[in-house]
Length: 405
Ligand SMILES: *Cc1c(COP(=O)(O)O)cnc(C)c1O
Image (tube, rainbow, N blue to C red):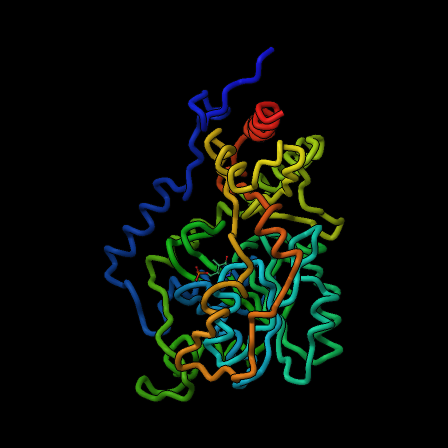
């Protein structure tokens, strides 16, 4: 039997289907319409629908408090400032993440210290964190990458021993769990994004969750131009800004939150099934899931690609071929964050980053290998597909392998 022609070369696609995102129906339309008709689009800090959603999300996470804000980047900034970082303090971050995990640190006049990720999970390595701690270290921002929980026992233990704050960047991790606990609820603060690609979305938006009364009061004040509980409207105590969301976003998020549990379960089941299929393919290795991962929300399903089993085809070309076959897939980040011009050129503008800071010699080999040769992403909306779709994803990979043999 001759091999099938690849879709990228004009052959037929393995899977010819669109995976919709966001998912909504008349419920979302009605509830937003209702707010529009009410005329209560926003309110001082921030309106009853916003407060209601914050309570729902806090309860969902098992946290005491939640504070919405304009996006999942500002949420990190609110968390850092509330945690008491000072100019020149160091904050440990992974290099395999979205830019604002690190640039939010710059925006606090602090120094992001990049440490490598674990090759089996692509999450920040606890041993690398420990090795990077200095007297100036104030906080760690673990990122639950793709929705896979970091090694939180180890990270919380390090934080406790060194008196560090832990801000969980949970922008990928709505509904995911570690040992039965919702991600975001384990560290001092959990930060989430509601940007359009994320597993819970209102187009844009963000939220922080915490159990700490003082962090709550401060983040809430910073979100609301420095006002405080019980203060006057034109009385400002803290250097915050207007980071409030609208009532339309809040009702949309409430409606979407009702869908989240079922969607997360589906992605989790599909992810486990896809693991079982891809494990069998020579040159493809899913990331590791330990027993501590009681729920994975697969914001990104990641597998490692070994070009030597695919005729030495570079990863970027493989990812393009897979996408052409109809698998919503992507090569992922082209480089670790410290290689970005922002850090290489130290283009820190008004921010007071010490002159001694230098990113040109930073080297995180696992993150570099993930970017350059290994990591391929399948996106979350595809993980909401049917069992047969997972089979088609595996088939598409095998088709490419056969064509290259
Ligand atoms: C999306 C994302 C953010 C930023 O969220 P926005 O709402 O887009 O500002 C932060 N961290 C990670 C890991 C993200 O993926």
